[in-house]
Image 1 (cartoon, rainbow, N blue to C red):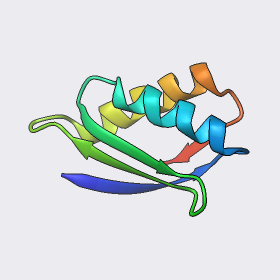
Image 2 (image 1 turned 120 degrees about the horizontal axis):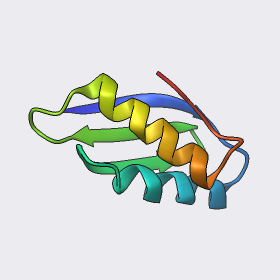
Image 3 (image 1 turned 180 degrees about the horizontal axis):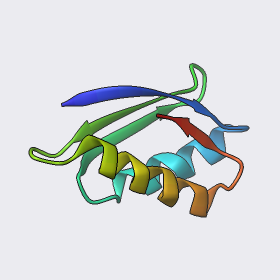
Image 4 (image 1 turned 30 degrees about the horizontal axis):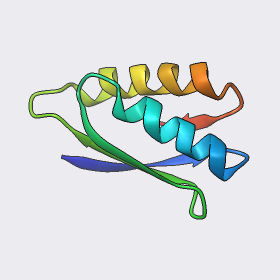
Length: 72
């Protein structure tokens, strides 16, 4: 299942860091961050709990870019 999330990030480099952090999160098959539209698309692994995975994605993204935000 794929889902889009609105994000807030200051620069394209920061968006790339967020994308990498999200992709490495367990339960995420793929993640794409579009800096121009300020959206993140996440494809979840089958059987993954979307809410729990996204909490971890947010936590991982905050580690690499503390000023970012993902609106769940």
